[in-house]
Length: 319
Image (cartoon, rainbow, N blue to C red; front, side, top):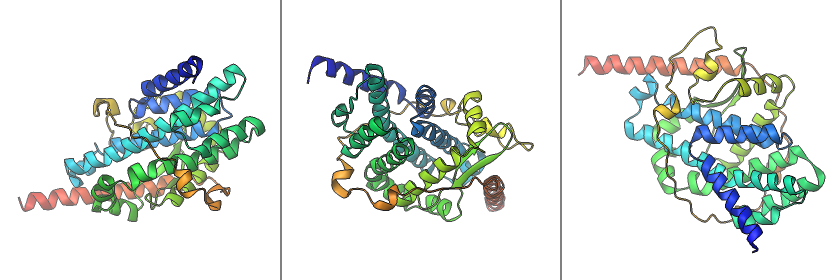
């Protein structure tokens, strides 16, 4: 490899490391990239999913979760969100930077992707995008790729499998649909979808396509982008709850609670060589935006608050 290519790789790796510090830096990096290259729609999707990951992390600091979960359980859930999001960024952001370099030099540099341990699947998809400019196909391909990237190292990894995904806190959350990916605006409206059966790869890919369909719907996109550009991501749901008529317990900012986490990366096998791409993964999904998610989501959160208060009362009577 020539010195010129080595310099490109060094730049990509150093920029990825710089922005992969925590949930806040990742969210900003995705959003900033999208504002320069809006044709890469996945970057905006990733920024909003990353915001939701931060909100889920900071929910663990709220009173009901402090009551219902042990410190060990809280740490394990945080690390699940953190590890998955770190891995996705470590794979996806180099792809975005290779595209950025390709645009600057006005020639495709996607042959660099294998050296960055990016799947051959995405090398082909970026080459196709360069020639045909199919924005939705690229977005779907990146959804497929990133969910496959985290499947073995996080979802199927023994630590997370047996200490998170097969334990009551996660199973209860999944059964009761307590987790959702939300798309807010500055008018107090929420769109989005509940997260169910997160350990199922196909379900995660379908969820990503549903969220993307809602995000870029003309009724949602303009006000969602306005929110993203106007409201700094802190990790606290106060970012969007401040626009509600009714206020809720305010979570602290993420960087006041969690330190930067040092991750160890391993050389990832190319998932595409192992299992290929299922046809249903590439099929389009059209999801009409539904405002009903707000009422449903907060009704479930009220139940969690009520249950934690009962548990506190019961515990005090028998202490």
